[in-house]
Image (cartoon, rainbow, N blue to C red; front, side, top):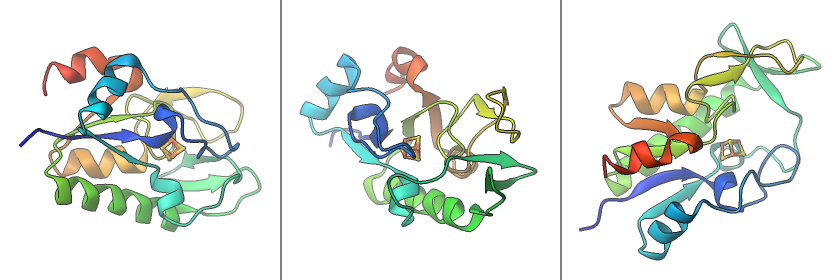
Length: 149
Ligand code: SF4
């Protein structure tokens, strides 16, 4: 059986981001893996029922909030659990997720001030996957990640 990986849907051309756009059309290495049936795509936020488009959200003191103060933590945590369930269902132990997102970020997230400032940190999905032994890399670490496949 070929090992599969979890990939943020917005990295593969799906227009699921808060602003209704995608992040990248799909890096070549991942498109090749996708052709081989080894890529499982997920947008945890839309899987949790959040709409497209939706207000942008940032992590502040462990809570996920919008700029006008709406607390979306519950939906983001639900999205993280959906990602974990999907990994467990497909025996996935490696994920490539979109950097800087309050769900998918793995090295950086925005600092909660909605001023565009990033800090070291991880999103809700990354935190939960890592706590369950799944290795998470960002889209700029694809080559490093795929060496582990
Ligand atoms: Fe992309 Fe993840 Fe945000 Fe969905 S939750 S738009 S997959 S970064």
